[in-house]
Length: 319
Ligand code: XMP
Image 1 (cartoon, rainbow, N blue to C red):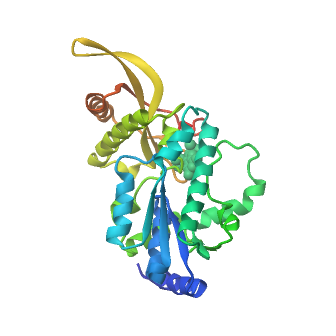
Image 2: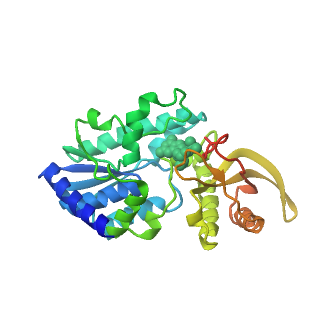
Image 3: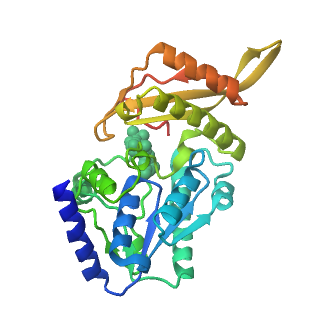
């Protein structure tokens, strides 16, 4: 893509001008935006960049490993992988309110990030994968809805608190352009085309209280579901697909015995921007096959249901 390769060069020059010989810290989330920003900045200033990946223990199966391997081994970007699962899960213990869960995660994320940045000896710059729509949204925010449906956790106040300047090389781009740039930079397709994943991760896909055991069950079911979606060639037609582990146990029968285990709900939606969404129309054979696999392969689940709610009135996530 001619335009994007020109943009890449332009941004590299701009980043070098802004940063000079300063140090930059970039928080990775595993998402496309922060990944593309990090790779672009690394191309511009090399090891003046350090990435921090705060692993809250709420990622999907093997996801943290994939992120760490890609950045460290494939791109040789200095990366601090902070395993903070114990801290996050400890503070989330006994908490079942969705907003409380989000607030705890948001606060801990900032605390851990700050602490790690201090350990690195600080930096003058903080890199963020802010996109053009984020810029517009925050400008029009005062005129926005007065009711908070969900307080999406973000690191908005972080640069001021830490007294850092922002490096935001994606500020002029839309999501599809970020993907083009990511391909241009050699980021693998499996990463570029990924569905969005919420900051609080699996915490909001485990309605009610969270335990390591529940997270483990959810991870396995989710991985089987996504595996079936990929194998059937439907992944790219879907905006987001994920499993939810309901805090409800039901009776089932397996072999000669009675079971009493959790219900797993499957969700898949189509959407343009996440603001509205339609439930995705799988065929029933696909759903039946996936449910059978989940129940046979995951201990702890004996019933699977499919969510046929669109947004509105539902939201995409269950919390
Ligand atoms: P809802 O559930 O509000 O989701 O229909 C719309 C989009 O936002 C994502 N989402 C979040 N992302 N922090 C995030 O970073 C959050 O707390 C959060 N809650 C929802 C959701 O995955 C969907 O893409």
